[in-house]
Length: 395
Image 1 (tube, rainbow, N blue to C red):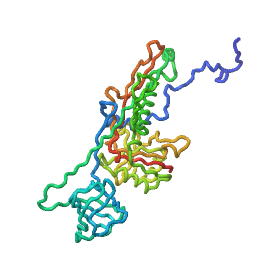
Image 2 (image 1 turned 90 degrees about the vertical axis):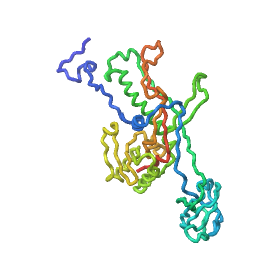
Image 3 (image 1 turned 45 degrees about the horizontal axis):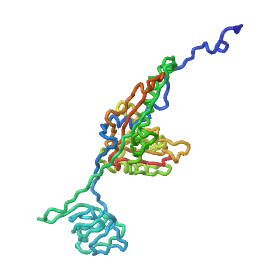
Image 4 (image 1 turned 180 degrees about the vertical axis):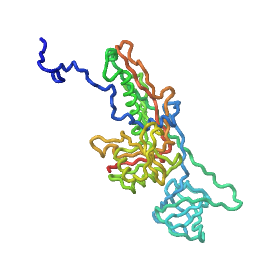
């Protein structure tokens, strides 16, 4: 029996299902640009890895510092100097050394051992009597001097190191039934929409690997004898060896110390990519406001960047939304900022395994479709002293 309406029709008395809903086809995402590292480095230094384990070579500068290791101290005329192992190997005959505390100069005269060397004391004075050298004193190599007509000196070289990392297999599958695919949806075509959403989420998986990943190789079989090893790629927090714990409110002095540390090694460039949590960005905004400059987005692949110019170098600051905490702020990453030398980062992908969308991965009998994003990539994080991490920033 039909429902009788004895008044003018309004939106409150017509059948609700007869009204066409006004639903936007666009799905508004919370954070479409949450993976700036992956975006920048995949477009910068990217190249094929010929094997899932890839290596590179590094060589630092020669060591210049020694520390005295003699509990009884060293008298002013004693010529054998005992130092921490293996710093004696850093010097060669003809090297001139400076005892920093007293300013006394020493001339190395014999081939040293790992723990000691023989020298001329007070080389800058009477060349006999210097000052007492105390246990723990720092000694710096400041140069060398050789006699006129002398033979070639002692040969000296230092080895490179060969760090390594692994490529990691990333996969993200999505799909829908034939019925849903052919249904009319407010959000539009299901396959296209899911493809865009999962592209974003897939890049976030790679981004989290760059930040938090630790390299590992699980070579034992897991659930099937047909499976091969499972590898993970190490990220910046694993490779970086320089960390400054702020321990609460970050002061301007601490911020300057961090800048000094981040640019202490300048082998790559005088610029650092600074990924900062929301808290860290707020503090920088307050402490360094007069030195901040906005970089045009067309120069940064659409990512908002602020440049901070210091006397040590330039930071390109990006607010990184993956540097976050959950309920226990102190246990998370909401107080982090990470300074990275972009010239020292490589994006490595196994041949034919860079990010790709593979379609129709479903079994033959499935009444629907399954697509998958797949990549096998790893991070080449070179010269760890060129990067720096700050933690524990609360305000």
